[in-house]
Length: 225
Image (tube, rainbow, N blue to C red; front, side, top):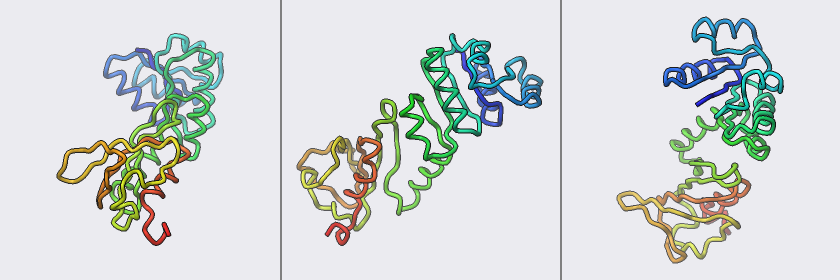
């Protein structure tokens, strides 16, 4: 496969190094001459000096035959524009962008970036798995980010404990797919399934309805009233 990486910083450098070790074809596009020279010195002739947002640079890089285009600069706007040019002008089948500001994640997906990666979001999700006050964890994005597979842990004081699924006021386009209970086999819930203390619920929801779904499942009895 042919990978083009825009951005020769630490992320781009080590990503290229890992791909080269697997005998993949890799080209880094980097604006800074000094950084580009260091990459060539250490990894070989795998770095093109230029602007990964410009059509002429991407044409010179052979983006029309690229299998995967990855933008990992420290500028979200540059990463977004580079991926859009690669997708729209050169019909690259798969684009991946580093999102430095997690708030830009939804925008990237709406504008056609296939996969977004946010180191901040990844760290926060690991924290959420350990800190009881955070009950929703992202597991996977479906489609172009319009749907999310999430896990929600019922807190000890959730109003939903003891309720049947049919009694919940779930947001439109939200589906409970799986209930995980300690010491038991995973359960595919029906409308008559009763939620229990400690349940971990895996659900599919629209991205914009995550908060509403979390509130419905985690709000305590006093708040629900």
